[in-house]
Image 1 (cartoon, rainbow, N blue to C red):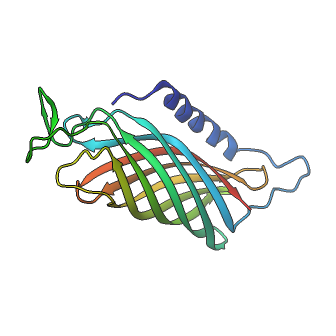
Image 2 (cartoon, rainbow, N blue to C red):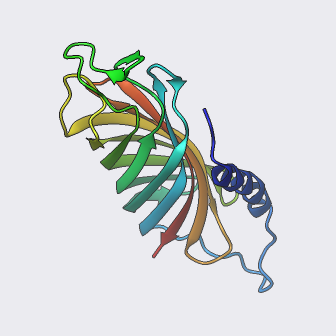
Image 3 (spheres, helix red, strand yellow):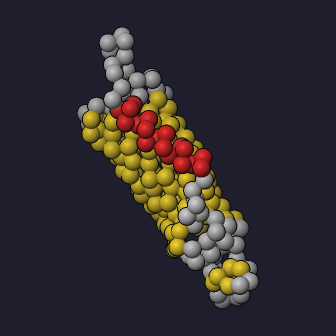
Length: 208
């Protein structure tokens, strides 16, 4: 799996920034910024790759997700939120048909299949968070939705393709009012072609 240099820099920055943010001092005013809960928007930008196929693991490609959500429960060290998101991720250099000298072929019809494709998804998710240290939460989520895959890269499959998944991550409520930073890893199982896509993403959350 080849990881673009820009994604390596983004991942490295997240690994460095999150621990530093978790140790951030109390603001000069002497009063910590209140952690906001309620309606929020979220932007995720990271890497996406698929598992299985002729390559085993595809080349990593850019992943983007935009979402809106609401914290339906928040007390002490726990919170629960619901979210709706639109995302796009791509698989590159991985054949999910029969890899031949003539390229990726449908094993039933022998038609050409693409080994490079993009999945655009609409997903609903439920998130749970537990505060492990002040302002830093360990999160988990379950998700479900549908995907539009273009060009179609699977035998006997049509759009929309249902998907299920889940993930874990970290979320830090920064001392900048309204803003939280996070780092998530999520797996998406595309039903029908029965393949798994993995998204690893730093994220920025703004709570109103």
